[in-house]
Length: 234
Image 1 (tube, rainbow, N blue to C red):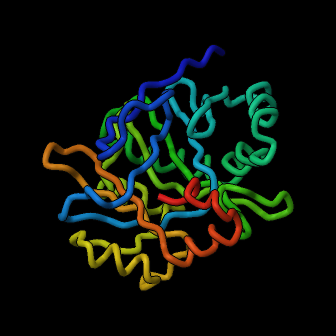
Image 2: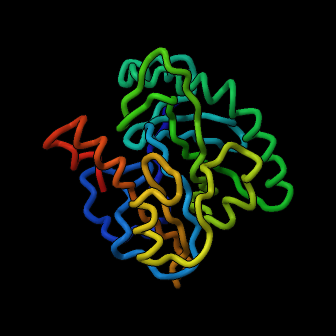
């Protein structure tokens, strides 16, 4: 099957412009320009960003990372492993732990609204994953953090409403965004290891996102990567 890259989702991500190559899920900016309004903050997990594509007639037909995509079949899985040996369990973990659950939720949603394509965005990680690196013997899991229907990313409120029964990212905070909230995240008030992703809607109805990481995570990066720590920061 010839899988063509899909267009990027209709995100509004302040500060993100002039990407050197298309991304299946764009890099999220820091919170400097995040709007002071109602938001949901989800825990940010320290793993690898992956995605899975579904089409009504084909079922789950493609998967990959933020930067690439492969057919969801034996040949595609082998090619994926050649490119990403440290992520070799991604397809199996999805098939064994998530596919049936997601199919059931999509069936319920299809009864309420019509759509033909769906993309699940998830974080692939184990207990000992750090800065996108994984240990082979460490059991892995997938945590869903976004869903796209027919090329449009769901608002955080709709995402929670429709997919709360699945293993989605933990809701850390729901309310008005403020500089004080960002400071509280950085200083460890919310008991998250890496940080949070804040999701909201702009006045135009587009999804806006920002990431906030903890000072404790910053200390870990500096200890592990010395002068290169900024590559893993905000």
